[in-house]
Length: 228
Ligand SMILES: *Cc1c(COP(=O)(O)O)cnc(C)c1O
Image (cartoon, rainbow, N blue to C red; front, side, top):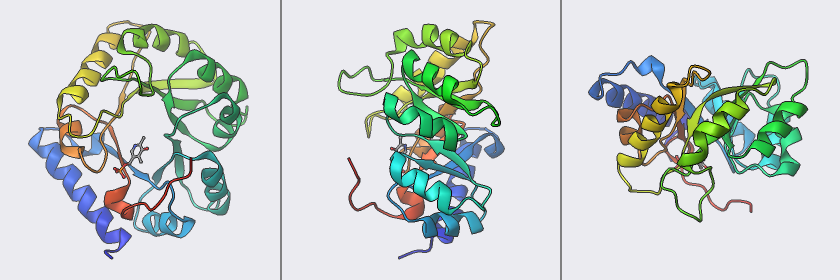
């Protein structure tokens, strides 16, 4: 099996290539290493190869890894579905939450953010293909939700996040970028983050303007089973 450090070099190279093809500065793209289901030792290996941002989906295993790796200067991002009963632990352990899709969750995260921590960075997850089965707010609700979230004291609304259906090409990424542009016409909002693109669709996401790409498999290898 290739080493995590070798995989990281490959993914970084890929980001550079995609960025230059899109005439973008690679420094404007943050690599988020998605470590869900992977043990703390894999995160430590990536960390020692220079990786700082890690994304987790499942709260319980994530909190265990945060505790285990507390001596490392990791920036933790929560990217999984957020139910009300998870908001406190997310507010306490994470620097970012990418998957906020309703106001109730945003309110709770803001209320529960510990006073000694800086505001929690959040992205509004948008169901950009507008499929009834999928998480995320509808594109038509996004502007109103963004203006409500930006008023919450302990959150810092950074941008939009989406998980388009696999193999749907560049269009959904361009749609998310376009939505963000429209929202930014509102002078109350200055969104600077587009969290989009995974192992299989990095190139399209970067071409459309991704500023955070969330990459799991290409760094840590395939995942076996995932908890519910
Ligand atoms: C698992 C996951 C990823 C990473 O997916 P890969 O295909 O392994 O790169 C990215 N974003 C979210 C929200 C995920 O759940």
